[in-house]
Amino acid sequence: MQECASKSLSFDLSSVNRAGACVSAALMMAIAPALLAQSTTVVPAATTTVEGRGFDQRPFGLNRVRLTQLIPFDALGIPVGKRISEVAYRRDSEVLSTTTLTRPATSAYSIRLGNIDTTVAAGRAFDPRNPTGLFLSPGSGVNSLVEYFNAIPNWPSLVTNASGPANFDLRFKLVAPFVVQGPSGIAIDHYTYGTNNSTYNYYADIERSDVDHGKATQFGASCPLDGIDNRAYGVPSHPGGAPAEASLFGAVPSTVAILVVGASRTAWATLPLPLMLDGLGLTGCSVQVSQDVLLPVVAKATGAATFLLDIPSDPQLAGSTVYTQWMTLDSRLSTSLPITFSNGVEIRIGNTVGKTATPFSILYGTGGIANQRFGLVEAGIAVVTQFAHD
Image (cartoon, rainbow, N blue to C red; front, side):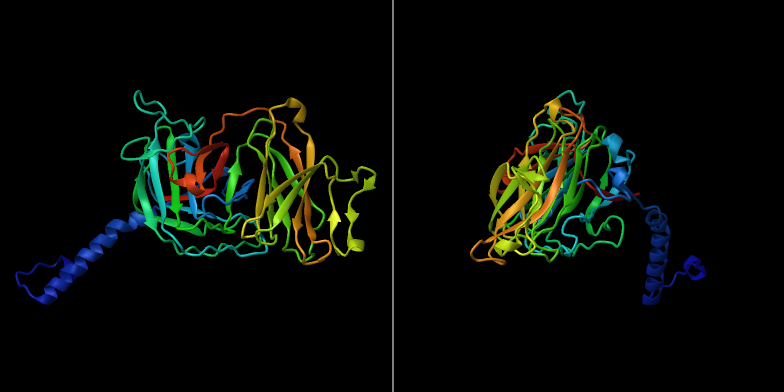
C-alpha cells in the first residue's frame, strides 16, 4: 500500500495500472464490511430448522402460474431499511422422497417485490390477513410491484438431506436490492407463462398457520410394491378453514384416479379391513378404507393427482377423522382387473372452527387465470422463504 500512497507527476501506463490497483484495493476495503454483514432470515421463523407442515406445486411446479406471497411486517423479522439481495426456497422433503426433483429450463420466470401499506387514506388498501383477490399492479411506492428478477432459470435438482429439512437450493439473486419499508408488510410476486401448460414434480415446502389444522397420517402399503408407485399423502385442515388436500404421486400418467373417502379403516360393511386382493391377481394390493364416497379425477401427465375436500364450519366436525385411499386405472398387475391402489391416509380434522386471522396469505392463478388481474385467495399459507439481506 506504500506504493499507492506515493505521489508522482509522471504519467505512463504503469502509473495507470498502479492507480487502478489502488482503486480496486480501496473498493474492496469499502465493500468488504458489507459483504461480511450479510445475514439470512427464514420466514416463517418457526421453519428455520424444521420442515413446514405442508407442500405445494405452486409456484415452481407449474409452467403457467402467478402467485403472490403476502407477508405481514410483524412476521417478516427484517427491520425497516434493510436491503434484501436474494430470496431462496427449498423443496418439500416429505413428498416424492425417493425422487430427485427436477424441472427443465423452459420459459422466463419473473419475481417482483413490493411494500404493503394497509393504512393508506386513498387508493386500494391491501391487508394480508384479509386480502382481496385483486393482484397488486406494477409501479412504484407502496401497494405496487417492481421487477427484481426476470430470466430463464437453470432450475437446480432439489435433493433431500439425511435428516432435517432440505437446503434452500432454489435461489433467486435480485438485480438490485429491495429495501424493506412496510409499514404493513411485503409482497413477493412470482410469474411465469410458458407456451405450454406443463406441470412438474417440483414441490416447495410450505407452512400453514398455527391454528389446529389437524393431522394426516399414512398407513398401509401401495401397490405395485416398489415404494414409488401410487403414494398417497394428505394435508389436513379444520372446519371452516382451507380445504383438506388428498394427493397422489407415482400413478400411471394421465390415468383415471378415484379418491375413496371412508368413515372406517377397520370395516367396510361386513368385510374386515384391510382386505387383501392377491387372490384376484392384484399381488400386494389391499382395500384400506371403507368405500363410502368415490371421487374420480384424471391424473396429470406427471402421474400426480389432487382432490380438495371442503370442510364446513360445523363444530361437530372438529376432531373427527376420515380415511382416504386412491384407486387407479392401471393394468400393470392384471389386465383382466386393471386397477391398483395407494396406501391409506388418516386425516384428523382440526379442532379450530371457522376462519381465523392468519398472518400469511397467497393470491394465485394457474393456467389461463395466471394472465388475469384477479386471482384466488388462500389464507394461512406461507411459502417457506429464506432472505439474504444486510
